[in-house]
Length: 205
Image (cartoon, rainbow, N blue to C red):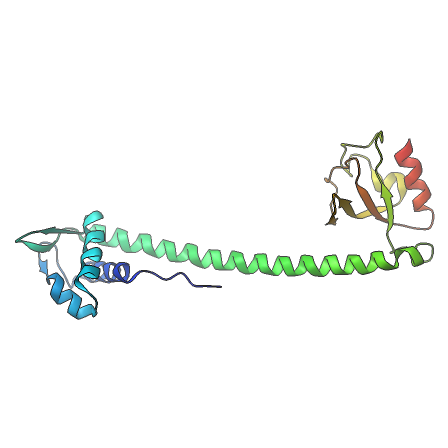
C-alpha cells in the first residue's frame, strides 16, 4: 500500500509552526526572509513562499512588503499542529481498516472455496453425510417469498440449517437468520436424510 506523502512546502509550514509554538520564534518577531529560509531548508524560494502562504492563511504569521514575515499567533500555531496530528491519526486508522478489509477478503475467499468443495461432493454424499448441502430452489408462488429465514422458523419446521444461498449467479455464505428469501434463490441446506423431503413439503405448503 502506497504511503501518502506530505508536500515539501507543507512540511516546512509544519516545522515553522512547531518552532513558533516551542518559542524559538516569538510573537511580534520577524523571521528570516524567504531566501534565507530557502537556503536553510535547501528548497526553492517558491517552495518557501507556499509554506508561508499556508501560515498566513491560518493566521500564524503576517507577511507584508517592506516588513518581512512577522509572527502573529502562537495559539494558532498550536491549532495547526494539532489539526495535522489528528490527520496523521486518521491515516493510521485508514491503514488499520484496509488491513482488516484485506484479512476479511482473504477469509471470505477461504470460506467460498471450502463451500465450493462441499458442494462438489454434495451429489455423492447427500444420503450418507449430513454435512453435504442439498440445494432447493425457491419457485414463484412460494408463500415464504419475502420472509426472513428467522420468520419462517426454518430449522424448527424442517430440521435443516441454511448455510448458503445462490442468488443471481453469486453465492451468499452464512446468510444468517435475517436474510430474506427471494424468488429464484437456491437455498443450500444441511440436515439429516429426511431434511430434503421436509424442506420441499414446507416450501410447497
